[in-house]
Image 1 (cartoon, rainbow, N blue to C red):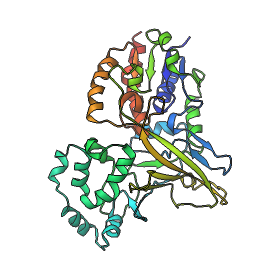
Image 2 (image 1 turned 90 degrees about the vertical axis):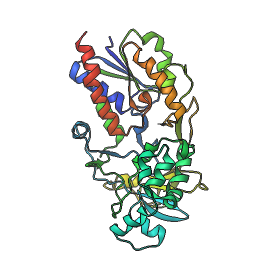
Image 3 (image 1 turned 60 degrees about the horizontal axis):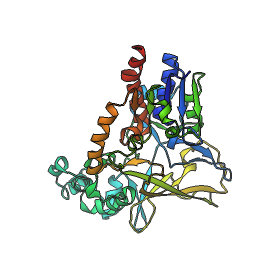
Image 4 (image 1 turned 180 degrees about the vertical axis):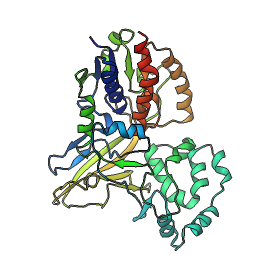
Length: 379
């Protein structure tokens, strides 16, 4: 007998499954359409180089949420990796996010922190930040027109396949502006990569006698047999669940072009962004740098070029585009979600939100505490 069905085995689904099995003793069945668990966090060892590859692009774990950090450390230990990103513009590399070194190199200056802040303030209008209605307006208000044109505009157009004027202003909030030489991409208290890899971590979360994982199982092949019969946690695309009743939501997907290069170090860092529109890919991943503690061979390395495009129905959706048209549709879909019997929607796809891994785990723990656990306690 199954007490709870979970659709999708990403971090949200696995967290709910683990909590339901451990804390409530429920029999949980996870339905996973792919041939592996873990969603986009899945990783595997490249047979030719022996390097662990993040199949769906580099995944960097970071959090300042102490509950999440304590929780994830039950299933894996972490290395001390600190994520450093470089942006390539007109053939030159610049630290990203934009910091003091980026400003000085780009403008060919030698400013200190205070002078750099004053210099940038001369190019922006702080009053425009709060009133900005789209990404372009807010970005220019934060960093000025020259830096926006060089490092944000082209990259954003490639990444989102959307004019920055049509994207929500808060998208740019993920990219800080610094007037120091701090190059760490994330400011969180905790950061690192799972020592044994993501797949080992994810498998540890699913390793419970009350959890059954069924791979290669499309939920929609059995949906009619389950909805209304058993409680469900759904982490797939919202529009797909309701058979696109109000039209398709905008999703972005990624394609990866991998190559083994006969060198021990291709780009000196795990991720380099390519800001210019004349370069078709958005970034290059070199996975060996994610685990500096590992003794990888130095004869070759594996890299992946990342290309972004709009997702078609048969593609794997990665990120919600979230235009104004999408938000109008989402309001209608949320009404349907609220009236769907004994179904909880969550995760990046199930909530149509951009969630990092720690955010997905946090939201799953909260949903379990506030909604799922009380539901079963009342039965």
